[in-house]
Length: 198
Image 1 (cartoon, helix red, strand yellow):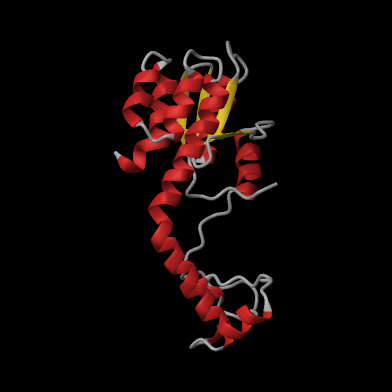
Image 2 (cartoon, one colour):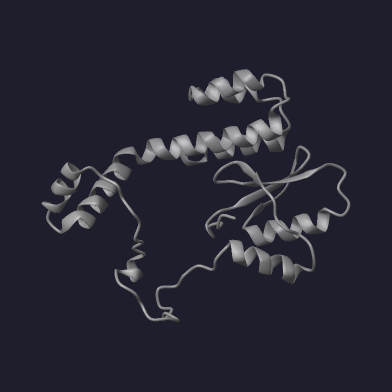
């Protein structure tokens, strides 16, 4: 099972009504209290992806939070002393060793760069992130909105047209097409798609 980042927020819906948004633990406990008596199904969404996610809500609050703590690691504070000896590399910087497969000419070019292959690769990645950062964030927001929209509004009127407008980045047409959808669903879709471009 994948780890859930602490910075991520979640939103729970009961039918077309938004129950709660916030960190994983807060959302899980609210859903746990509502779940025994749902009139309509409750679905939890990870806001960063717009995809539904299941939390194991069995047992008491402490048990639920303990299970979530395994999925949601506590934030690492820089002043925390390591509990075990450090290995090679730069763990304080969060450097992670992984395999990279390149052609010989790529290795040759990287090896000739000041600081070596690792420094050159980090610089290339940082430059690419700066160059495409806004577009990447817009794509991720659009994809999250579409995933949520598919689950919660796939059967609503004008879904197909709204999807086309979303992917065409036609915000005016998109918001007009979803204007009469249930308010909480509509508002959450707009938040996921456009909150960073308000």
